Length: 237
Ligand SMILES: C[S@@+](CC[C@H](N)C(=O)[O-])C[C@H]1O[C@@H](n2cnc3c(N)ncnc32)[C@H](O)[C@@H]1O
Image (cartoon, rainbow, N blue to C red; front, side, top):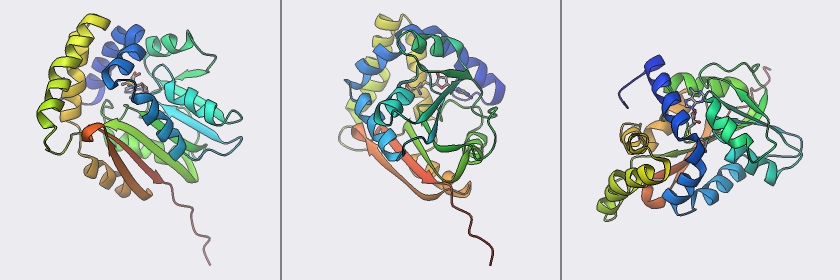
């Protein structure tokens, strides 16, 4: 499943998230012991939203990052976009957020629209990583901030056996018991292990034109928050 690319991957991902949408938020809290709430706060803090600025939460799912953005900056204009209807419907049940159905590889927004583009656990799912990065670059205004929260391959350390157990046993069992879908929660470790390393993703952001690129690992190295800025074009002299 993680080897799928392009449209095949999109179909698989949409079907998987449609099936787990109803239990998605609860599973996130259980899998991370509630830590994902803190990581979302940090993700939004790094987006450095000022009053009235525009933020896009791409691959928003049920809209947790978008809601955190509105909590931290209530006057911000926040758009939550995702291509899985069921995830957005699950998010609509407990908030007044406005969602838009869109593919992260080709959104309907004009270039230079947003002051910040954030995503949570989107990038390892997309059918074409370079295209997703290029699209986010296009959407940002010059000076705009990109922040990506994503799972990542941990570097080997003394926690490695416990991390393996958590990813390959505890999460699929929880997925089976809570969401009634162990396969979807085997996709999580599988897609993480086949995703680019944090260093590699940072390199791809730089290649796409982002400046001030950096990342920070969390949760024993299994999660990373990445950031970068679209450079302000220098006026020609
Ligand atoms: C793991 S969920 C993350 C949801 C939410 N961002 C969060 O932080 O919990 C991944 C989401 O990305 C969406 N997604 C995956 N590929 C996408 C694409 N190409 N375009 C739009 N949404 C996509 C899925 O539908 C799913 O809702």
